[in-house]
Amino acid sequence: VQLQASGGGLVQAGGSLRLSCAASGRTFSRNIMAWFRQAPGKEREFVGVSWSSGSTALTDSVKGRFTISRDNAKNMMYLQMNSLKPEDTGVYYCTATQKGYRGSEYIRGSLYDYWGQGTQVTVSS
Image (cartoon, rainbow, N blue to C red):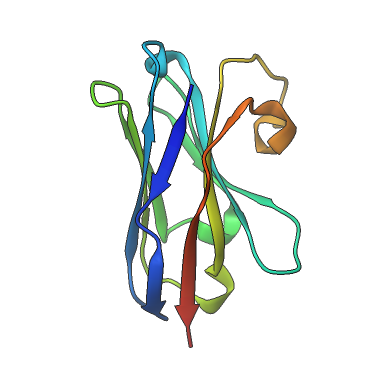
């Protein structure tokens, strides 16, 4: 699986961006897909996940502002980001895996086998 993230940019606080993740591979629909981000000087953190069933989950800091969706027919995943804050600044990565997991293990980057190159999101105050 190859992943290509795009859609990042510079936006003012309160603005919106839509990130896209294009995936190769015929088994895309089986993948657990997720977004992670990494701010300068900080550890990479989980943002949200999209299961093959269509269910999604988001980290608490972005709930109510971000939405994850996917289009299995197009091998695409999206992250709609609204009401952006300066603390949302970072490089955003899309990831994928077909591994099983236990509990909330899906928030760990180590679960995911495939990573895109990342797209920079900068939110100015």
